[in-house]
Image (cartoon, rainbow over all chains, first blue to last red; front, side):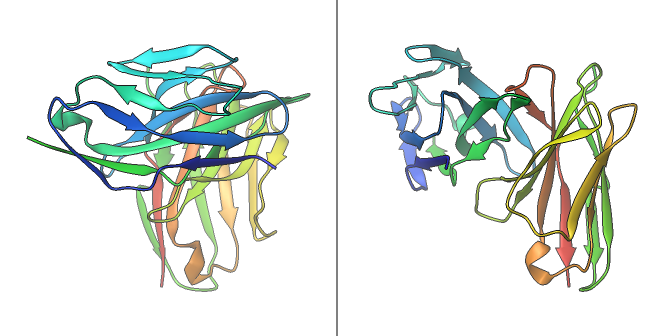
Length: 115
Length: 111
């Protein structure tokens, strides 16, 4: 089956620090990979995506590279801000004959940025 | 364009009751998926519908059912509610098969 493992939180950093949130996956077939962000009291927002090996997704200063050889999709940002405080979810989806399967999510990583 | 909308925002039900949650997708999106998010966990896939047909089902009991209407809106029904059904229920719509956009969710509390 499909599964996503991401680092446990909370992760606490100071403003302007470098961020890495690790994500590894197991999938049947060739998955598309995603990072979603959830701010307090809100639904999930798509942060970035990558659909094939070696693709790099990027948005709002965040980046993640689809590494097939290590089955990883680590999220990075060079300089975090207090406004980046949220819960981050790594997810995958595998295409099937009728479209894409539902998303499989990791448990989430709570990121806290201190001023 | 309006995003995915869900109703109601919050709901309190008693064990054994039935509940219906509603979702309207982004205009032009023909696929709707439902997820259950228990506090502190990642969302779990419940159903996916495309063009009014069920295209995928997660590992949930038969008490959970859904349908999609001709205007692509969707309902999630849960019968015989249990305390463990308390969660945030998320709806997502998609145009491209794998890129899903989520609504704000319905917070269900079962007492």
